Length: 150
Image (cartoon, one colour):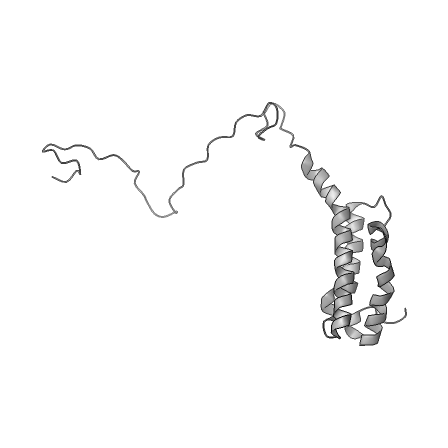
């Protein structure tokens, strides 16, 4: 289609035509919908997603009739679902492998064989600039008072 691809500067009929031209692609597999190869890298997936997001984001169609806005939402959400579906395995693979400990050190990851127990958390500290004396049990004083006041 010749002309400006930004729907926010187009008329409603052109925006509707743009969205309707995308509608048949919504049933395609995620890679085809995003326009990338099946073996696309995460960077290629993200670039394709951002390109389509800029073109079909619902805010670009917000000034048009509700049916155009509804179609824009449907197109955008389908594009987002396709991207989420394709990027999720990469995210899971990156976070599924346990962290590798430095040579000579045990892993501190719970549940990993050979992991060392994690140290107990440090007690809370007073805000900087204030001094809070440590809490002590009252000491008995001569005269039987345990408050420390004679």
